[in-house]
Length: 180
Image (tube, helix red, strand yellow):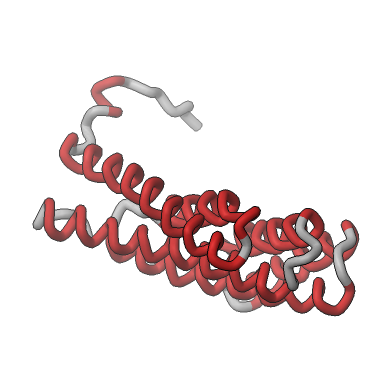
């Protein structure tokens, strides 16, 4: 097996215009998802508003793909995975409260369920959703677990929505012959 060689002529072979479009999408997703995610979360729980913004940005950037079709597929899988993780975390925390072992078991259960429904590619992010919800539940015990889970799911959905909007606006309207 030959090692990967990084040569300038290989790196810069990609169309420069598409490189700028993808960079602009990343900037737009970061700014808009953070703003909308943090503002939405602030309505329900002000102290975790920044986390809401960051979680929205992470979700938006994770689903960004090189084509519109791949971005839409990635968005759907991310949303399903996040829903599974949020539901498991919300149920567990409502019934038993926070514990390290419980958080680990919920993350493992989330990975298993995502594997069973054939979305293992996003199982790791679904498990990360469980950990974020559990950690925020411990740091803010006054927030009901299902509100916490709901906020994390909506923040993720905001990021996914911003990504889809960004991809459609930047690739369809700016560049008519962009990859689909």
